[in-house]
Length: 181
Image (tube, rainbow, N blue to C red):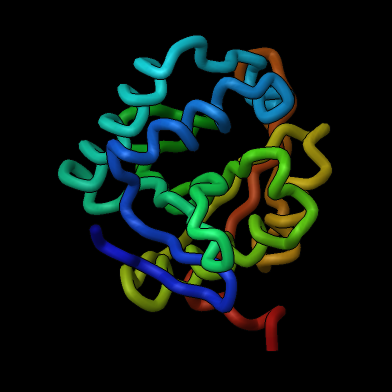
């Protein structure tokens, strides 16, 4: 198991096939999918396929979403990380790194998503030396929009994706840390 980042309360590590119970709890919850097209997974097999897809991204793209483990309990609580979109277009753009996070609802409101996102951003700019990182959030998902702004991404514009209004945020490497300092 490869650990990519540790924070004071979290471990961000590669996603493993053994994360299936946590992934199923996360992605089968309709509340989690409120701003994601409301398409929760239906079976554990769906979750196993998602884990395998992420693991293949590690191989093909050198990056993917990571499992978030709460240090205090050792529990899988969700995922965070970067995803390279090179074969899909969003807002007329492709070939970009998107920062993302998703937590099991019982772990919401503890600052974990922000903590994981900050660690991911730091990894992207300081370890991977990315030129830019973007974030996408449904305009009605106030929590996600707040997190993207809190970690320093700048609002660029609103666009429509699958009949939903989505905000596009972006931060360039040379801007990283300006708002934090």
